[in-house]
Amino acid sequence: MSIKELQQGFATKAIHAGEDPDFREGATGDVVAPIHLSTTFAREKVNVPTAGYEYVRSLNPTRKALETKLAALENADYGLAFSSGLAAETTLLTALLKSGDHIVAFDDLYGGTKRLFNNIFNNYNIDVTFVDATDVSLVEKAILPQTRLIWIESPSNPLLKICDIAKIATLADAHKLVLVVDNTFLSPYFQKPLALGADIVVHSSTKYIGGHSDVLGGALLLNNPDYYEKLQYHQNAIGAVLSPFDSYLTLRGVKTLALRMEQHQQNAFSVAGYLLQHPKVKKVIYPGLESHPQHALAKAQSTGFGGILSFEIAGNQSDAKAFLERLRIIALAESLGGVESLIELPSVMTHSSVPKEIRKQVGITDTLIRFSTGIENVSDLIADIEQALK
Ligand code: P1T
Image (cartoon, rainbow, N blue to C red):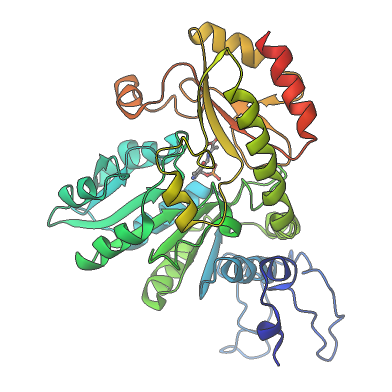
C-alpha cells in the first residue's frame, strides 16, 4: 500500500501529507519539511531543471510541501499557496477573468474582498452584482450574459449566513460559471466545498489554517487541471507567492487543525449559550444554534459550525465600544481563527471599507460584535465577558 493510501484521516493528512520522509541516496529522512531558502536552483544540464526546480517564485520545496498538504486536506487535486488571502483572490480574478466580465457575489463578504471587487477590479471593467446568496433565486436572477463567476463565503463574514453550496454549484454548472467558495471560516476540517460542487476553494490561511496569529497567507484548492494551469501561470507571473519561512510556519500550524477546530467549536457553543441568557445581550448569531435561520442547512452541508459567533448588546455604539475596551483576556483585534480569542466591531474595523448604507442593508449594525473564540479555558473567557458586560 502506498503512503498516500494509508493517509486517510483528516488529522493524519494534516500531520503527514506533503512531508513524507525522503529516504533517497543523500537525503536525511526529515520528518518535518525543511525550510529551503535558496532563491535559485543549480542544474547540471542547460535544459534540465534539477527535480523541476528553477527559481523560488515558480516553485520552492517548502511551499510545495504546504500546497500538497492543503490540497490533501480539501480532498483537492491541486493546491497553490500565496502571500495572503487577498493575494490568492487577486491571482484567481486575474487568471480567470478579463475586461467586460461580470461576477455575482454574496452581499455579506469580508470587507477586504468587497474592496478588491469594488475599488480595484472595477477599474479593469469587471463589474460585480452583490446579492443575498442565502436565496438561490436571487443569485440566478443576477446572472447576465457576461457573468463568468459566482463568489460566496459560507458562513459569511461577519453575519455567519449560510449559502446552499450544492444548489449554487448546480446553478453555476447550468450557466457554465465558475463557483468560488471562501472556506476560511470553517476550514477544511468542517466543510469541503469541492465535494459539494464548488470549482475553487479560497482560504485566508492567516486564520484557522495557520492558527496562531503569526503568519499571513492564502491558498487556492481545486480539481480542474485547466484552471490549475492558468492559476499556476498567474501565480508565477504576478508573484504573490508564500515565502519559504511562512510556508514552514503554516505547515507547523496546520498540523493541529483537527484538535483546534474541535476546541474552537466547543468553546463557541459555551460562549453562545452564556450570551443567549444574558439580559444585556440582544441577539446571538451562531450557525450551531437552532435559532439560526439556516441551522438545518449548516448541519446538512458541513460537519461542524466553527468557532466564530456574532452578537449585539443592548445600547448604542458607545456601549459596544465600552464593552470591548473593558475586556482583558479577549483581545480587541481584527482577524480570527487564532488560538487566542479575538473580538472586534466590524462597522469600524474589518468592514469599515463597506459603505454605511450597504452595511445597513446587509445587517452589519453599529453594535454588531464579532467574536472568534480561542481555545483558552472557556470559563476564563466567560468570566472576562461577564466583567466587561457589568
Ligand atoms: O487577510 P488575508 O490573509 O489577505 O485574507 C483576506 C480574507 C479573505 N477571506 C476571508 C473570509 C477573510 O476573513 C479574510 C481576512 N479577514 C480578516 C482579516 C478579518 O478580520 O475578517
